Length: 152
Image 1 (cartoon, rainbow, N blue to C red):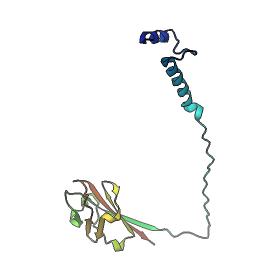
Image 2 (tube, rainbow, N blue to C red; image 1 turned 180 degrees about the vertical axis):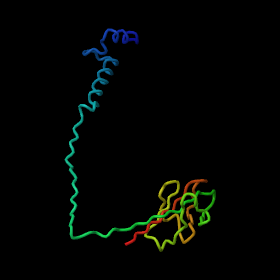
Image 3 (tube, helix red, strand yellow; image 1 turned 90 degrees about the vertical axis):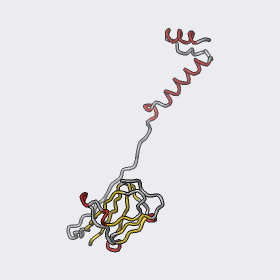
Image 4 (cartoon, rainbow, N blue to C red; image 1 turned 45 degrees about the vertical axis):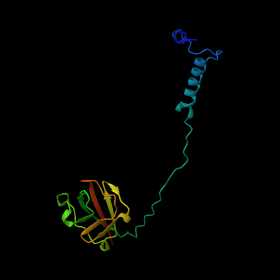
């Protein structure tokens, strides 16, 4: 059967014939069946049972000691081919601190272009950041060295 025959059947409202097994009618029946099968209104059976709860034990006799946390950050922009950054490279206009001694902070994290870097690709000593990786950041990529000190 040709294309005009299928077109004329559509115009008469007979998209597929229930007893017909031609390619067009089989395809139309399959489309209708898959449409019903994939319809989300027929398949929504998700009924979560998980009901989380948090119990907080408050005792008027005990007041926990607040933990103080101090964070400071060294900020700079990457320069092409540069592996060593110092306090002179800090962007002081954005509130950058100097590079602190890692022995005097609780932890430190290096972010290049906003992505946390593994400690294996850099070393830090007071006033100096060494990038050990052969894959250096692109020019003007922001470099942030975050220092966290827990007090208490």
